[in-house]
Image (cartoon, rainbow, N blue to C red; front, side, top):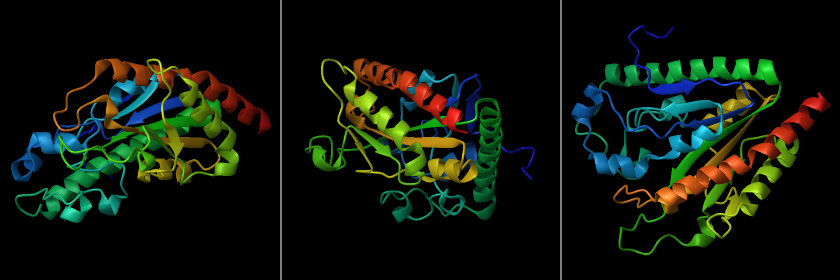
Length: 268
């Protein structure tokens, strides 16, 4: 049972649609007891967070947004790995000035548990109303890890949009996923087309895996990772035109998604 003083580290907006959009890594806040012993600067934290992803959840009526930093607790990792302890948990970063005590970790995990309990309830409600549903599990990733002046990572292994489907029933959800990818690829993105590929850089994290395990017959969670070409990942400066265009690209996939969901509902 969750302690009554557990902090809410997310925001949910409820709509009436079988499409849900989530940005669990958008958050930057940390609670005071965490802030006191963090060794990372705000800029260092921001570099590994997913700023601006919450904007893209606006394509769906129902939105799930993480409000606190993944350096407090990572909602996209299994519970036992949700609080980073060692540098190898966090891209080699030394996260803490001192080892967090058990009580601090337990409070972070209580918030994690409360998040998953509320999302479970939300998605059960969506499933009850609509049968099949889709979750856009939206993230972003770095591609200039060698420094602001170094060359970006090779595009061959770093698509602009990585679609992670490694933990879903591909046979059941294949037509829907393929329609989604095709519609993203075909979108006129500021006069060009996005490089959208499946399972190249990432195959999907814990959040999407948990959705498939919790709603094996009803829920399709598509892990969508945008390379940070829409911002300067070292300064945090956004490119607003590209951020808006990404939102429009996601919006363009909704008619196809709804059509595929309708077809699935007719089969059951």
